[in-house]
Length: 264
Image (tube, rainbow, N blue to C red; front, side, top):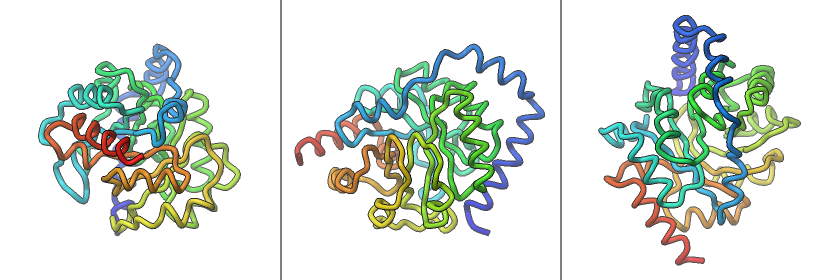
């Protein structure tokens, strides 16, 4: 059994349990109290390319613990000060050390648009994301059938959430054809084997479906990596491990952006 299959089974079971603890109508009441979603894609397009989606992630399946203290507020505030355009907040506890409460905590600590990042397979997950303050949510094409994907996109639109649809291979590309997308991303890491393929962003680029923003994900570390992604047509990058493995994540982001400006 691969990582993705195992984690999706956990996510579906965990979602079923959470639905028992908090019925959908309660979540909808919380959603109604939220203001309108911020324009996640627009914030990335407004930045000098590439826009940075800085990730709040305390564990990684491949690296283990990245940051022992779950100091969400400190990390979120430092990312904003350093020049991030948006934040990605892990909510899955298993493998990632995340929690749904991290979204609300990050939102209170900074003013950046928030992406709820998890292995979402049920419309209930999107309701919870919005209720907790997310402006956008990740959808992984490999985790969903075409019918499930269409349902999830419809629910996201109903809630005002933008979506980042993550692709990895030809089957994902085929599944995404004809869909109306806000953001589309390519993940260099195979989520079944956890093996990285840094050439994937180039091989997939010309086949990706239309979207407002193209995002490159995983394995990006240097200013040269970011310049290469921009050259391939990606307007944004999602990065977390480089930042979260350092004592001061915001300072590490500021150093990266400084290096990027120096190479232009």
